[in-house]
Length: 254
Length: 179
Image (cartoon, rainbow over all chains, first blue to last red; front, side, top):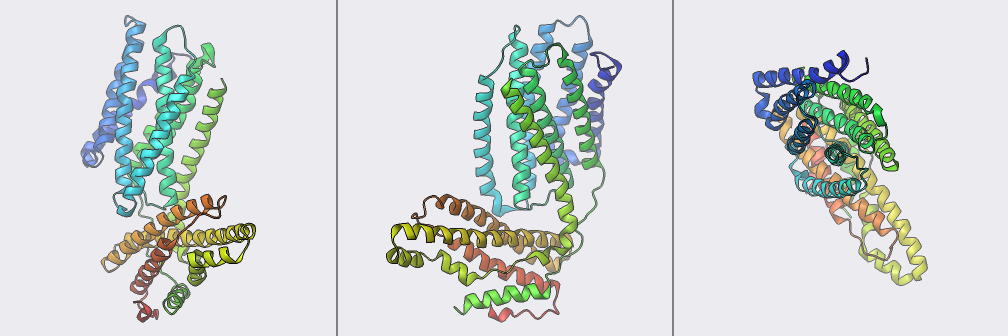
């Protein structure tokens, strides 16, 4: 069952992309593609690219180097698409909080520079294989996933520190990307160092299953109406207002 | 191999932090009904005294350099405790303002938005102030000013009182004390 090209492997390889097509269609129907254009493009790009790569993998007459070149090219374009989606999420999160705009931009730029620097160092410690293209793909995947995971983690920590309110879809997109990016860091780290030898295909099952979970997370947050849990007003109790007032009076009469 | 293990551990940590923050975010929103209870009063006068450069100059003149460093570190720690309290209050007020905004009451919207913005600016200033305080601890002779935190705290008090008055018109809030 846990073998390449087994039934489970075929299911996990193709099901997320079919689900992404359905998600893209729902987004179109509900007008979410206008609100999240980068994420909409990501779903279409992933569905198309993933489908093509799957077909190239299962068609026997496609040469190995052609598959790996295609995969490498797909990975490079995917990096840019994901960065744009993270930027979109960031913009949505901060849209309602103009006082934090400048600080957030400075911080995320700083974090981005540090992460790129760290990713470059990590790439320098690569363990090359006989076929350089496979190594290059794994090293690129590892470095890029470190940057993406770091950026998503920063977004969550920043929002938690300032108690920012996530919209349901924004939280869903970010959560899905966060889970995927962390899984990719572990996956590519083990793959790039060839730690599992001939058993590396087992990691493929883990990452494919994780991806399916992430697609379902996006489905849930984008398509299931979110409960408005903050529909009540928070009253400031009398005693607190008196404390505030007393402190203020003390300040004014000093 | 070592790098791979480090990265796998980092990935697990990142995943657990992301999941925890995503879950607690929901719990925080649901628990914000009692948020106002957690507001801690702050003695602004004592805080002003702590951050007053004239006080530091006076202590510097009256104490030996070694004694001054000890006293200055104590004052910095006390300052950090005040700033922590202000940051906590700002966080509570962000949630209170958000909840008021979500109520959909147009009478509250402007006051709530004002409160959220002021609270966020205060929280931002407290974050920077705390970083500066902790950086100043190893070098207690360096100058430090946290006036922006105090000024923002005054504005926030006004914004919170205004929102409280709009939400509970029956509560006797003495706005006459405001400038």
